[in-house]
Length: 329
Image (cartoon, rainbow, N blue to C red):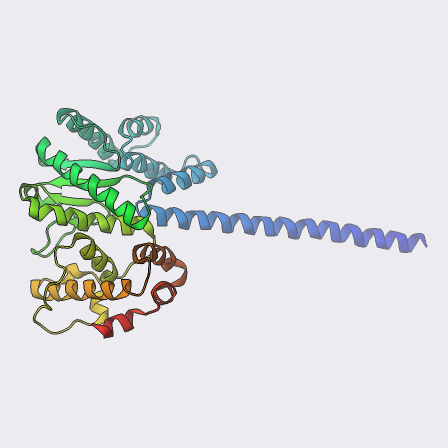
């Protein structure tokens, strides 16, 4: 009898011991999985330039590894991108390593603070300013004024307001135009920052629709971390800016759906680019007809792209697919 009790005791202890090991193993696996998910999300936030999300995650990762120089470098850059220039400088001064990017952030922060002071410009509510080539205060304030109007308009249209400030670069030199090389038909551009040639600010009929157009791209970027097909991105931007609406079909061969999905900046030929833009606007116009709340559904469709993909999201909100839209044009 005692022998049986002892054997039962050994079995129970064995189950307990091995159960603890298995539980510990699962907890370690779960911890690794959570860490990997956090790293992935952090990279997505950085790529999408969603700085508040990126800062939260980087600080969490730094708690795990406080001496990680790569994370420290990222945090300094994130503070800079949020216009927290003095905080960025103070943080860099606490770090115990040297890096050319840190030197750049220190110098650039000082330059931007100095230029803001010289131009007597207060921090904008929704935009962070960078200047390349000494723009006039008049140009800067005009750009900000139009962009603030556009920001309110787009926010009301989509019922969405970006969490992070949007960056404007007013430049004179092509060194700061962002995309290199790029076709000569391109004016302003959005590459995560709204890059605006200062010369454009002299002609209101030109720059007003351009600023609305590029800001729409910034809103699209803020609404999703997924890759958005170019026809969808450029189509909605053209509908918002209204400058090309009701233009006749451009001359030339029709594009392929693949060409409408890839970057239009690969096109050196202006005529080909006009065809791509025309088809994009028409496809999005056709898509929006299928909804009672087109801009709200557009917003939600963008949000679902990451989890459901393009055609499933289009079917859900607009009862169509990219191929079907293309074939109707």
